[in-house]
Length: 161
Image 1 (cartoon, rainbow, N blue to C red):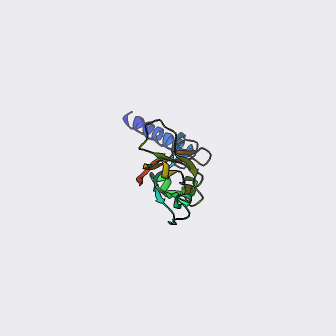
Image 2 (tube, rainbow, N blue to C red):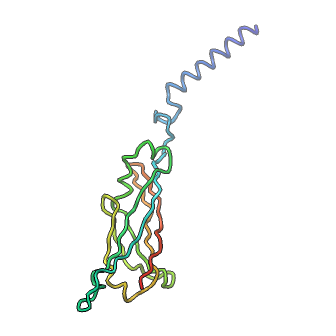
Image 3 (tube, helix red, strand yellow):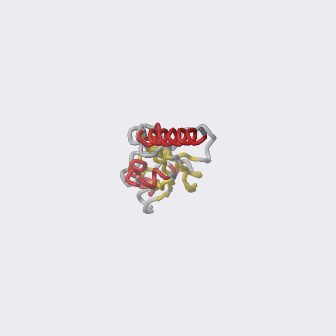
């Protein structure tokens, strides 16, 4: 009787193991990934200020610019396996540049978007009248169809005299 019980338990274990393998573990055959796993990327942003060339007859502030770049690095296993998705976190990111010397809740100085390489540029000709410490911020971004999540970031602080 004991042998029969052992054989029945062993067959039941084999049968359940075979069903689990054939069904993909109950996640819809996703190849071992959990449903809803996204490729997550960390973001970094830089901010630079270029005052433009000085000319005593032509105000140099007319050519002043803020510029920088958003760089992206994988934050999880799915992102490391799908590095081709990095470009989705670089292009068309919204960059907000604020004067941190003004009271909190004030309007941003300017807003721009990144190109396909993650670079951005914005006119800063009005910054001469609002001297202070400027900082750029890139907001988080989610691409639902591509299952990509890009984290937000803040830049270094740049002082405009």
